[in-house]
Structures are given as structure tokens and as C-alpha cells.
Image (cartoon, rainbow, N blue to C red; front, top):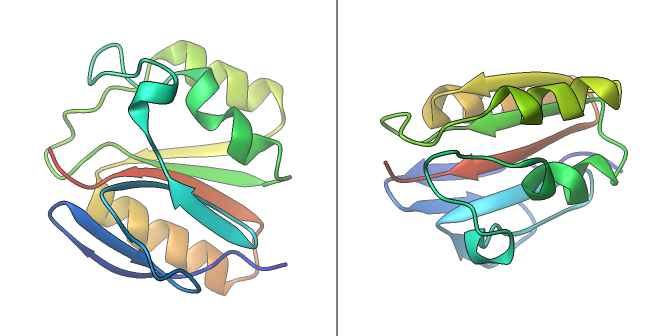
Length: 122
């Protein structure tokens, strides 16, 4: 299975190839995507992305995980989350969301088993 392309990104809206849903925040992995609902894990801008937020994507067997911190990079990524990913042998890239989408799409086009969690507003 390949990682689906992120087809479009604008403030508060993301479209992923193969899905009819318009996402605000989303999780993407080889073969799928879904809404990233921060309420599931109690995530807030600070302290930010928790290991629980990325666990589902890790379990899909990704080699690389791209985290989009938002258009203004308001979403934090604590070292505990980066350490969790590295402990599982996953290359992690933490970027501003527009840059994160470019990086994710480039890796997906190269056939890398890439996943991502993306915040499309602040």
C-alpha cells in the first residue's frame, strides 16, 4: 500500500487522495486517512502532539512520520513524542504545515512508507 497524496491544503481545510472528507486536522498513513480529533487524547496546542496522537499511525508500519505544527507553528511537539517515535525506529520530521505537506508528498512520491499528522490552522 502506498501513502495517499495530500491533494490540497488551505487554512482549516485539507483534502487527501482517496477520501471525500475535507479535514481540518488529519492523520494519514499508507492506505488511508482520517480526522485527527484532538479530543480523543486531550491534545492542546501546548504541550502539543502526544505519543497517543501518533500511536495509530506508528502501528500502520510507517518508516517516516511528518508532523505539521500548523500554519503559524502554534502546535508544539514535546521531546517525549519525538523520543517515542525514534524508539520505534521511525524517522520524524517536524515542520510548519505547508512545508510538512510538501515533505510528506515528496516522500510518498518516492515510495516511502510515510505517515503524518497535520494541523491546518494556527
